[in-house]
Length: 222
Image (cartoon, rainbow, N blue to C red; front, side, top):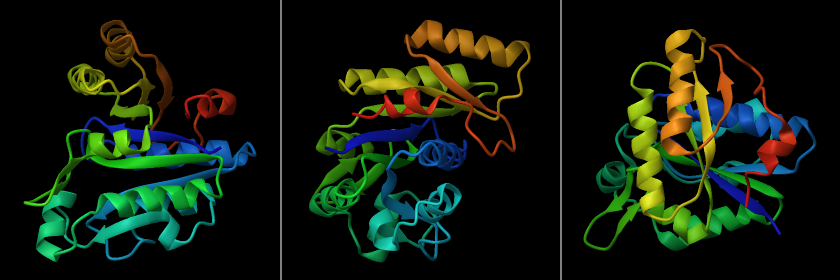
């Protein structure tokens, strides 16, 4: 039976897709049968130009556009608003089927979220869907990607607390843009102290490989 992992970020433009691509590539290169899926992407003209296309190409997954993504919006706003503007709302059944399509052929499915964890996916008179709803529909644990710099203690702690309050398991944290030094080293210490979650890997600017044991990464999936 396929296992899954949901990757969220502490906000927009912190490198979540970049880190996701490195994680999936690490597993793929180690021989794991890993796949990728994202429910909705906004701000891209095609799947190839989107986050999903970037992960697919970086990790050399060879997935079709239909496997990678269920909803593509051209408008560069939150998915719920893009869906309204383009009259194409996210449907629960489509997301579940999209994930299951990947899970049917891949042992490990990596589902990437949109922006931070409090991201509306659909918000209209028919339904109010957030990323946490998708996580619960698919019964997935989470991994948090955060920037290593100033302010990350606050955003990581708030993200972890938000997930824990909703009884969603947090498997750990990966820090992006890690360059070391007193402040960033203290950020790692404080994040682990305040959340009880481990910083599993640190990604430096320009890294093309994720310095993490593939078996450990595979163990995050459930």
